[in-house]
Amino acid sequence: MCSGPVEQSTRAPQPAQGDAEQDAQSAARRARTDVREVETVAGMLEVAELFSRIWDAPLVAPMPHDLMRSLAHAGGRVHAAFRDGHIAGASVAIFGAPAEASCYSLIAGVRPGVEGQGIGLALKLAQRAWALQAGVSRMTWTFDPLLRRNARFNITRLGAVVTEYLVNFYGEIADGVNDPETDRLAVVWNLRTPLPNSVRVAGPPSAPDPASEHEPSPILVARKGGEPVLVPGPGVADSSGGKRVAGTGPSGSANQEAGNDRAGRLRCWIPEDILLTRRTNPELARRWRLAVREALVGALGDGYVVTGVMDPGWYVLEKPAGR
Image (tube, rainbow, N blue to C red; front, side, top):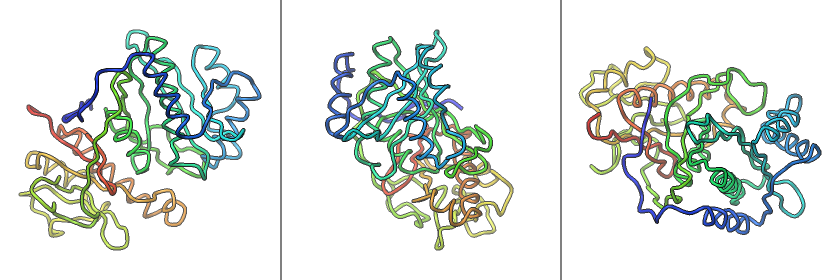
């Protein structure tokens, strides 16, 4: 399922390599961190321990130090952000197929307790500067579609474009963060494009209808109690009165039937804290995974593309002309 942006924010001219390096340095200063390449075994052990802490995986590190060592030796790059002498975040990237002039960000994370302080942005901009210096213009990676903070950061803050929905991409992972099934959204980031500056806002998650004719139509909302509810498109007969609790009908049926009669812009709710839900109510977390999967796979299959994340927590999807 390929996609591309429908609307683009007002952007400045494409940055040169020197501008990308300045952006990375400025982001690091704002985050009060020192971002640098990790080259030693001791440094990679420290990064591996950080990843284990972030992903709550004390027995098996999500990215072992020996694998990082090999990837760096093959031309990849391990970055780490340090604050007050302590590691605060890290990332690992490798190059993609030569013909594609791309790289792949394998993993990136920030130490618990210092999220939302610009450290993640400093790491991504350091990756961008490294990649541009190597002649690469695109970076790809995947993220959990149920993590609202990651969705907002990747799509709205960086301007990465969703290309496909990947069902159970990694299989089951033995950590304290992931669902038993690891669905992912794949994104591509144009490294030569300046960061976007647009912010969009929509209504609360329980609103089944748009507040105005200019607001995207909901395809997935949250009802009282936090249950996911799929909302069929206009003109679709539905015994639930226009709303269906996820998992109570044939998978994909509501969205597939609604495909030819959807509005021009759609919105899909992202739970506020799916990590907490996975710990406290795994069955509810499973229902959310299935609901988001059904809503997004159905919309992407209808030709829609994810074009943004609106506050307080909506994916925005739009259909390009001609689809």
